[in-house]
Each structure stands twice: as structure tokens, then as C-alpha cells.
View 1 (cartoon, rainbow, N blue to C red):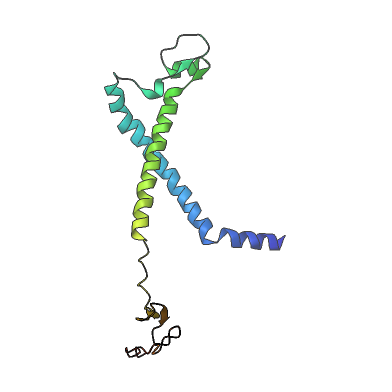
View 2 (cartoon, rainbow, N blue to C red):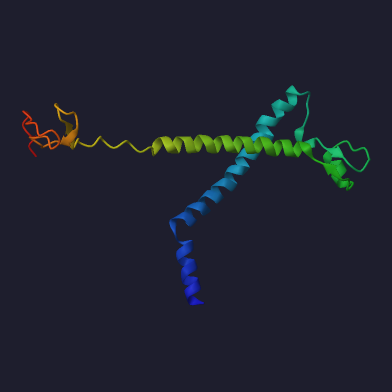
Length: 154
């Protein structure tokens, strides 16, 4: 049993698990901000443009009664399809997805790896037979031509 707890402790204290926990906590807090953004800032102008429609109050009553609002239908215990709440959730998702996209895009830009400098050439072309030979060669091993170039000094 002690070994089990030691393994769990090693698992829980790894960097990835801690990072995931921090990400979840920030995500929950971010969700509150996005929900407020959607419900308090974005949806009121959209509702105004669409003749004062409150998306959170859009529903289909399945029980046959007539209710003036979703709250009244819920209070009466009526079965409803709350498509306005679904629209709010979809808008929430789109905003969160867009914000995460922007965040990841910026993070990738900051941590973009710089390309490695090109490696120094190790071969050259024989001017007679056009095959690749070692850069320090003074005679071509393929055509046995004597190369007039002096070998590069190391």
C-alpha cells in the first residue's frame, strides 16, 4: 500500500499534472469572465438588433400550456426545450475557442524555434567528372584527376 502512495505522489508531483491543474483552475475562472462577456455585453446588443429578443428566454413549451417566460414555465414544471440557452452556450464556446486560438498563436510565436545555421559543407564537386568528393581531397577518387585547388586547412 505504501508503494502505491509513493507512485501516486510521484505521478501527482510531475510537472504535467501540476500544469494541468493550474490550467483547469484558470479555465474555470476564464469561463466566468466569458459567460459575463456573452450574457452582459454581447447578447444585449444582439437582442436589441433583433427587436429585444432575450436569447436566454427562448424556449419551446412541450407541455401545451402558455407561459410568458422560461422562468414561469420552469416554475410550473412544464417540459421545455431551451434553445436560447443552447445559443448562449454556443456563443460562449465560440468566444472561448477564439480566445484559446489567439493565446496558442501568441505562445507559438514567442517560443518559435530559430532555425539552426546551415552546416559547413563536407564535400565539393570534382571539376572534371562532377562527382561529390571530400572537401580536403587533392585527387578525385573517381576520375583520378589532380585537383589544382589547395585543400581547406582545418
